[in-house]
Length: 65
Picture 1 (cartoon, rainbow, N blue to C red):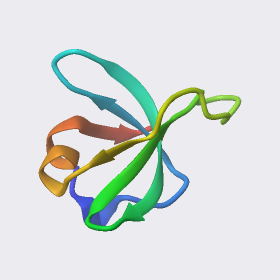
Picture 2 (picture 1 turned 90 degrees about the vertical axis):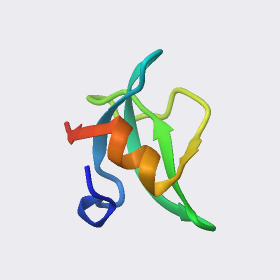
Picture 3 (picture 1 turned 180 degrees about the vertical axis):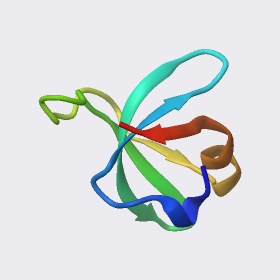
Picture 4 (picture 1 turned 135 degrees about the vertical axis):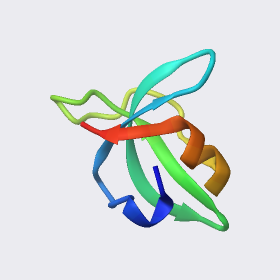
């Protein structure tokens, strides 16, 4: 997914070779994109935030939920 298509507070499916997760895009922190694991229906946070670079977003963020 392109970073220009990200919308704050939207929920996205993210996956890499080890994990799959539902994450909410929460904005930027410096030059990285902040994603927080969340429960897609209840919309409560349930994990440690992660910071992704633009290249990581293109590879790992698949689609909005």
